[in-house]
Length: 451
Image: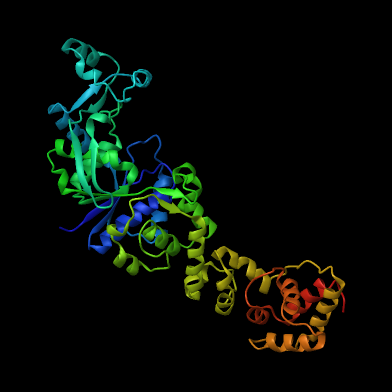
């Protein structure tokens, strides 16, 4: 059977790294096994879903390099189908009406906790007499509808976590239909998965209990839940071990993209995070070939921004000029790119180095008298004519002979005067890009006008 998987975000905000990891796992699994990757939008909550977020989800997935073969499919277009499935559950007695308000439910939960009981729904609506139920149905308050869970356990062999079981008696009967008649994700997702022929559900570990509930719903709709395999990826934590969800807003794909993280770096990081594979630059084909649920640890995975940045640096250093040309400052050449790419953590830093070689930065003046005299001599020793890769060596050789300096004493003041930085690209590479006039001006400025 051809694998069919889906990524089903809700367009109520921007994608974050947790979403992206699930999306990447689905896309890579489908590609690895010749399957179909479906983009489906959980958009039945019309009050919170917004078209700009829907557009952003598609844009972010494309930026990350993930392509879907079907979709985007919209749950809002399938309300009639969900209503039909709900009627079938009502007819079988598995979906029952409830009239408690949120305040009443909250009070019940508090009372159960005081008695040392789990704060689950007490199924009071099922205990109504026929007369009480008839009066409630005739009232002006519309009911919400709960699914009556089976007794016992829901069990499955998880592709990542191994054997898993959810004790259904320890879980509240879930609300599947709101009082306004709209379905909740728990229900709509099951109906969609059945109708779309989903073979593998790949998502985060926070859905484990939800999976037990949904398997029971699947069976109640007349489908074999074992026909669908489940894989739950352990949740992400920060470098300090704190749940990443507490600060997930700063790790949206939009924010990382704006910060200058390369999509190839982020995809490679998310694809291998929490696995036995090395965190290293890798193209799509390599990531697909190496994707294996058996490689995932069952422990939480640490999302370390410093590790991602180090990977981003490695990806940048290997990018050819044509891959970045459109994102470099206007006028930047291939020679410039090769000169500076080895010193970049993020591509946005290229703007600074373009200002260094082609702009009008003013390095701070050197205060030490001896250094100022040295820089004045360096300016005087600058060769005339066009500069190339050999110019720097010839210039500094003559300067060393004239001043007796060598090593750090020779090169550090030159770097500070020419670039304003303690570290950076090889001066032999950027001096030809800078040219004699710009180099002379900066050396004399740093020398405080000494000539």
